[in-house]
Image (cartoon, rainbow, N blue to C red):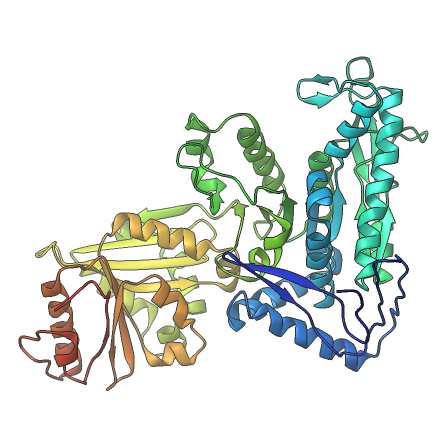
Length: 529
């Protein structure tokens, strides 16, 4: 395409499975941009009216609905917009990404900028440095995994950082996104060990003013990891280390490491690790024989970083093309690393702090908030149960209560309560809790009343986690289940619903089509009754 006139330039390349959707917002009258193969000249009109800016943002938010549900997108957008601009995200870009995925990266960052988010971008330039050193006849030297930087190497590093920094800035501005190059002036450092590593720095301080100034001016700050001593000597610092130091000072919601691999992978199965909850999994992961070298180093670095940040902060490792899906959907795209909340499981109500249960039930349980039941009466009923399992977390932001019939262990367990605060949902603590429940209970049923869906409960969350569902039109409730593969057990579940709602179901249904219309059924296609 040789020209884009009177239209917003390419703002996103969204990867949906194996399909790439190139998304363009058109005819918003905000920018005039022209490009041609014969010339690199382009014009940019940054000023725009408030009404056109709002219209543009609304259009682009709608484009995000292609990768996630409307509720997901709007939920995360509100979450990210709830903090100061500089506290949204620190995005570290690997040097290889600048070479292989520059346009994709620029489009992804532009998309975020268009919806009012201002990520702080810090990039490396390792592969580019190695290429220049090779051309100059200089063989890279390392000590303990750290690049030894002599005066000649430092001079090459400065030139490479400046060139790569401007390359990304230019790519962004070609798309109409204001960007400010900040190749130095942010990181203060002392020599790590001059006799061993040469001009390699250990960061001692972070100057936020250049970053905040860029954001106030409406420009994305584009940083390098070059640091300076108090007397002005430049020092080389690993970009991952610099990003971690920056995040420690900024305390962003997201710390994103972009690479071409799109995450961390299991060393035996080769499968991508979708989520790592450090509080629950870190110690066990380090015992795995395949967790070594780069994987072990990255896990250790993430743990050290997140331990000093609020629990709302998390690390994501992914490719540039999947940035939107990672940020705006529950399923994500790369590897999400978070502290999580350590979960606790109790087999008796006596083991749990009743005040913790009361706090979360009063805050999140609709039946309690509507005064349909008191906390005291529900807890009293739990004491009469033969078997009950209670899950909660350390800060008391999630609660699950599961009952089971000891007289008939073949019956599926029943999930009575599944409560979570908004903070727990946004930090995916609910997924961690659900994984624990699935591990302990291979068969499970749970009921959701129509009033809960009407109050904003996400229907898709329940359908995605169930094998089937039974809807009763009389009270508009839906009973979900998983792990029930025996048709006889499904029939028993039907009977239980029939008993609860006082409606009859045919005694011996042969197929799904012969079921009474009083119950609507959705079960796996492989199951025939």
